Length: 106
Image 1: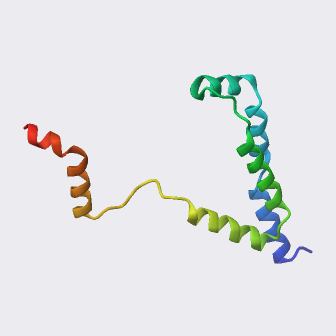
Image 2: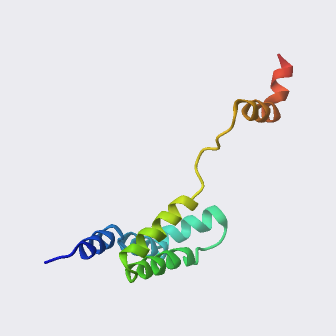
């Protein structure tokens, strides 16, 4: 006899999987990743952001489902959107600022 709150918490816990965070942390310590980072950036990766992600995921697992949903929704809203929306006037101004020199060449 499952109540609604138990079903909701089960669904929320199913959606949060720390496996991907653990896999990312595991890969971070691999020679392939470390050499790739050294080649690209000149330093080895200390994997601190991967540790933070894993700890954050495990912490979310211990919270009630209502808090988890609220936290995840807040994070989703806080993420910056990939596109910058502009009015036609703003777009024209920005275009001229970036590429105005090319218009004069014609």
